[in-house]
Length: 393
Image 1: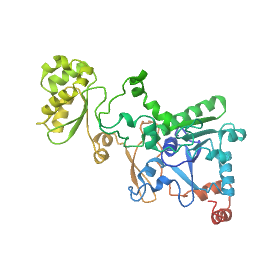
Image 2: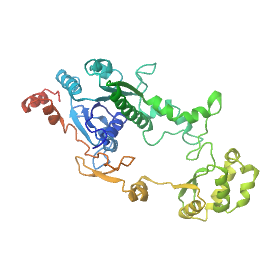
Image 3: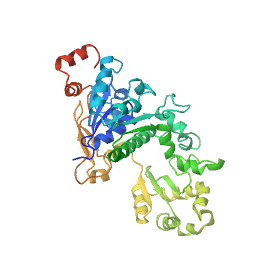
Image 4: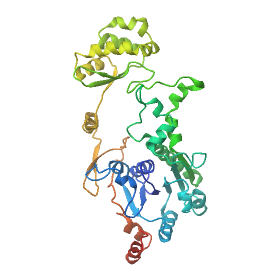
């Protein structure tokens, strides 16, 4: 038995933050019913066609769900949705435009009157109130508003993160808050309203640079893939054209690095390199020493030296390298999930359960489960056909 078996989630979601949160719940065994617009669905379905014709974002965030198509502007569809929530839902998750769910009668205030135990999780860019409440909020915009972009990139140019980290952070805080609300409900019998803001989620992740810049102090420099305040910590080229990522955390490691990697033990005693702050200030000089030492070596030879000195290091892997990563292969972390176009590989969710594996069912086709879900609410095949003809489903 999986931890959330018996829990039903109704979700009005699109893009990444909401779907990523509810996929975590599905992984743990919850039944997740995804309400989508007829004929179109979650607009993330159309982001690209890279996964055998399906969108990469959608395949990632929507496995193990049921797809129900409803035109929520249609009166009959609204009644179906309200019935579904009232009769089936333990949790309602939505990341529609601000106020849209409330206009459908799906606010916690309204639902808790008829179902006190329901948990309602609203995910938005800026939260349910405040001066930014109604601003559009896409991942890049939140990365910018949170200050993330200001400390990421090179000295000459700021950069966003590659993955959608604002969406991911909000999705994970939604997930963890929902789990906490379920625990609280076991004690109180009552549900909870959760208001998850993408801005607040990512600003939480920004607290180190915020504290570093407290009281008007200068913020961390943009240093590309290098660490802004610890050195040497980042990518360095080897003689074969590949880069090796390495990081030193303390003076013991610095001494070992000089002795066993650079083969220049005298550097450990030089005043200009005698502390992290001094090494960081003299990073251009030190980088040249490191690059010159690595120039006659291959990346694998550099890594062998680093491993022998017990200095933290990593390959600078491409996406193709990660697909074949020996650690993921060695721990048997890859599975296959079904889709409308056949099986695709999928990574086991982080964490290992001895009792059972996480749920990893199919990625749903648009509206795939509409008839079954409506039949479960008591609709006859003829009634379902009428709803479809009327454009309600």
